[in-house]
Length: 193
Image 1 (cartoon, rainbow, N blue to C red):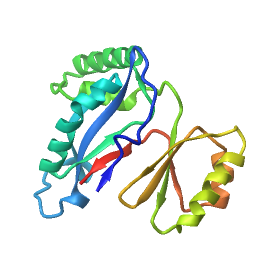
Image 2 (spheres, one colour):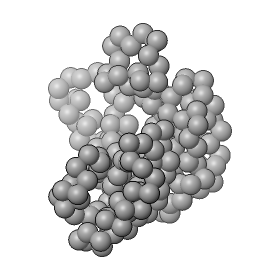
Image 3 (cartoon, rainbow, N blue to C red):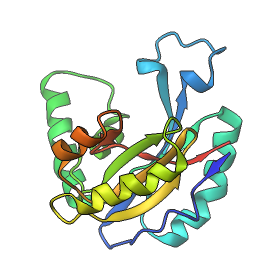
Image 4 (cartoon, helix red, strand yellow):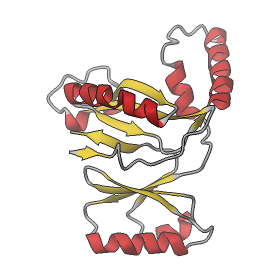
């Protein structure tokens, strides 16, 4: 079980929020009928969390739904801006009216996926094929690369861990660790039973 609710220590700001998704993955549910489900995953529910109290209040609901549906709870480590979401929603609604598209229910979630981050945070995905002692080497590499990167958080995942960092010289990092994935706008795992 992975439970990062208490490990996810971030700052909350007015007019900004964290975007949380409950995602049911085919990889975790291989015996289910996946006809018409996109990309072998399905979004079960989303949340916009604006305060620590809001996260605490909704935590049990999210965990219960996750356990019932065998889905994972993911959080985008970088906050989203209300102002940016409004602009994107306006464009998406106009586009749907212009092209006579009918399904509008998913537009808010789509806007949250498309929105700019209020801060740039990357997810360095270290899988279990790396030995534990090399994690400190990876961290030291990131800290010594150009741009004065910082390790914001280390979160365990099902396969090993995610390092949440500020941007660093990705080309130089890839020369040293070509097999480690670095995601620039991806979520990190908050909970999975």
